[in-house]
Each structure stands twice: as C-alpha cells, then as structure tokens.
Amino acid sequence: MQVYADNAATTKMSKTAIEAMMPYMEGIYGNPSSLHSIGQEAAEALANARERVANCLGCEPKEIIFTSGGSEADNQAIVSAAKNGERKNKKHIISTAFEHHAVLHTLKKLEKQGFEITLLDVHENGLITAEEVKAAIRPDTCLVTVMYANNEIGTIQPISQIGAVCREMGVPFHTDAVQAAGHIKINVEEQNIDMLSLSAHKFHGPKGVGAMYVKKGIIIHNIIEGGAQERGKRGGTENIPAIMGMAAALEESCAKIDENTKKVSAMRDKLIEGLSKIPHSILNGDAKNRLPGNVNMCFEGIEGESLLLLLDMHGVCASSGSACTSGSLDPSHVLLAIGRPHEIAHGSLRLSICEANTDEEIDHIIEKVPQVVEYLRNMSPVWRDLTEGRKNYVIQ
Amino acid sequence: MLYSEKVMDHFTNPRNVGVIDDADGVGEVGNAKCGDIMKIYLKIENDIIVDVKFNTFGCGSAIASSSMATEMIKGRRVDEALELTNKAVVEALDGLPPAKVHCSVLAEEAVKKAIKDYYDKNGIEYDRSLFPDCGNCEHCHN
Image (cartoon, rainbow over all chains, first blue to last red; front, side):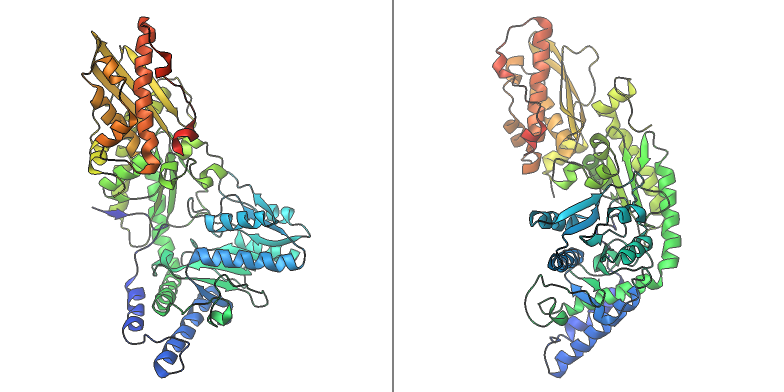
C-alpha cells in the first residue's frame, strides 16, 4: 500500500482539472492577445476562467490577476502595498513569525530597503488574535499580511476579525491563502480582505499557476514587465491551459467544501487520536482551528528525516520540519515560532490528507508510524538518556 | 534519489546498532539542537577492537555513516581505527550529498572520542593533537 499524505506540499490533479486543460493544448491554443478567431477563443476562455475564480472568492473578475503561483502572488501583493505606503511615507508592515518564506523573505528584502517589519509572536496553539494585530498598527503602517492557514501546522487564523480591524484602522490587509483556498470557505468581501494569494496545485489543479485578488482601488506594481496581459500588471502570455485547470479545480473544490471537510476532518481526527497514543508525542497547533487535512506532531528522541525515509519504505509519503529536510541548520521556523525547542522540532512529522484518502490508508498510517518511531527510538542515544533518567522529557 | 544505494542499505539495515554495557571506550558527539548525536561503544582486547556498537539520533545519512564507520573499524587495531577519516566513510558509502558530509565528520569524531576515552581510562599516553575538540555545529553544517 502506498499512501500519499503530503497534500500540503502538492496534490494530485483532479480529472476535472485535466479535462478542462486538454482543449487548450490541442484545439484552442491561440494567444489571447491575438485578434484572429483562434486567439479570441482563448481570450474568451481566459475571461471565463477569471469570472469563475472571482465567483469562488466573492469578488469581481477584474479584481483577479493570474500569476505563476502563490509565491509570485505573495511577492507582488506585498511589494505593491509597500510601494503604495512609501509614497505616503508609511513604511511599517505587520506580519507573523510563521508565514511562508514567500512572505518572510519578501519582508526581509523590504526591511533592507528601509521598511520596518513587525512580526507578531504566534501563540503555542499556532494562532494570533485580531487584538494583537490592532495593537501593533501604527499611523505609518502600510500593510498587514497574515496567512490564512499555516502550511506546516495547519492552524487557521481569525481572518475575518483581522480584516475587520484592518478596515477599521484603514490599513490594507493581505492574506496568503495558499493552503486555505479550495479547503475553507472564503469571501473576500465579507471578510474585509484587500489582497489574497492562492496556488492551483494545492487544490488538485496544475502546478505553476496561481492567482492574486486585489480589491479595486489598490494600485498594483509589476514584478514582471512585458505586454498588456493582466491589465498590464503581469507581463507574459497567459498560461491558458493551466488557468483553465485552476478555474475548474477551484470550482470543484469550493462546491465540495462541506462534504470534503466532513470526510477529511474525521480522518484527521482519527489520525491525531491514533498517533497521540505514541508516548511522548505532541500535536502541533490548535486541535480545532486547523485545516481539515492537517496533522503535525513531534515525537521526542528521534529525527524527522530518518522518520520520513522509513515511512516512505512502509508506503507512507509525508513531510517533516527537521533541519535535514530543509537543507539548513535550523528546524522549521514555524515550530520554533510556536515555542517548540530545536531538539523537539527536529522530530516533527506532517501528514496532510485529502478527500481521496481512505479509512484503510489512515489505519495503515496509524499502524506504521508507531513502529517506525519505536525503531528509531531504539537506536537513539537521546531516547536512551531519557528512558534511563539522565535527561528530562520535554514532551510529557 | 537523494542517497546512494549503499547509504540506503546502511540506513535501512544498519550494522552494529546497540550498546556495550562494559565498553572499554565510549564516545558521544553532536548535539540534539543541531539534529544529530552519535554515540559509539568500543570493546577492546589486546589493542584490537573486538566489538563496536552505536546509537544515533539523526537523519538517514547520520545513521548510515555510523553504521559504515563501525564496520570499518571492527576487528582493526586501535591505531588503525584512529586513521579513519570522514572522507573514507564518504567513499565507502559511495558518496553523500554535500549538505550531509558533516554526518561523516561526526562518525570520524565519534570513533576518535571513543578511542580517546579508552586511552584515558587505561592511562595510555597519546598525542593530544590527534583529538581536536570542535563542538561547533555550524562548522560541519556549512
């Protein structure tokens, strides 16, 4: 049995998405900027996709800009808000310590350019509050950017409340909704969201395509200069097949949100319950305010990369926040941000499931993870020190 | 594939895992903060390493490096084991990804530390320069 439990990394494309793409690779291959009929057919498809994506988010089609993915959307939204702020001499940005690197690294770059960045501390449950955002807002704040749902621990932030606070204070609000779109109901109008980023391959669409919602009235600055595509805000011939695949996948995911949430969160809770029986293990992130498909746990005394490799051999594809899997010396900044010490953060496991997973697969994971954890603990000098009383457990 | 077949073999079927309760020399290197710790136990008779065991907390290549290093010194004279280099461990494993070379360094250091412990316990004179004590994670990781 091979169980794919790494849907937060990427998802399998849906049949609906693949079928939606095919005509635009075979027959309707025109460039939407061309005036002839083949080009205009593509232009019509593009307009149609924009409308459908807008419908899923509760905005107008002209408020959608197609991008190469979530990272580009995050970059462009944040840089645009920063430039708009700079013109009014506002150079303060508020975000959180556990954002995706597409956000954090963009903010780091802006900091070097003279912006002041406030990264709000995240509570141990992986959440921040709207009150904390409000308290951090200053007269010179030009942007608040808070991720909708965290990519590692799956915690869902109080986006509507944060949006309300930002609207009240007159500060633009961006949210990186890459993990949320297609999995949680979003309505940018009702939630007072000014800018939002999403990525198609996180909801069974193709890779290399995403979208940015920008509320009308907010000036957007180009990252990619070129032609008049995307109202001149994003140069480059539109990736029509991918955009069609994204629109179809988002529509399908949004139509099934209630049904999927019910099914997937039940499997998630079963996984959490099963894996919590492993001694000295802990769930990362709030048990309730989390994505339906996200499970993230730390197991004391072991390291994540070896855990992943062995799980893979036992047919479980998962992910970890250990340093060895990130290619850096430090383990996941998300786990550190919620206060997990380094040695614990190295032993983390993220399982991200979707509606295609089955109860049998969940049982398989619940059977295999404890075996592999025990095997690794048996050869771990850290575990030996803990069990023989030379060190104290961090996770009780 | 991230790792060579040799690495995967030593990772999935590690040789010499365990503890020697009456070891003649024990060496532990690394720290949990960095994400890898190796502990090597030696049983030495007539200057020959007759048995060796290890415990490792770490990634696949850390476990494979420990396993390979223990295999390479088992049955050897102590002074031969002292000549084990991380490079030899890497070669024996058919290579390690650049970011993982520090695991082989840890294996070499763990062996040396265990031998130093044996020398110290038995009052054997040795050249202290053979045992540099680094203790800096960043050193090997970068």
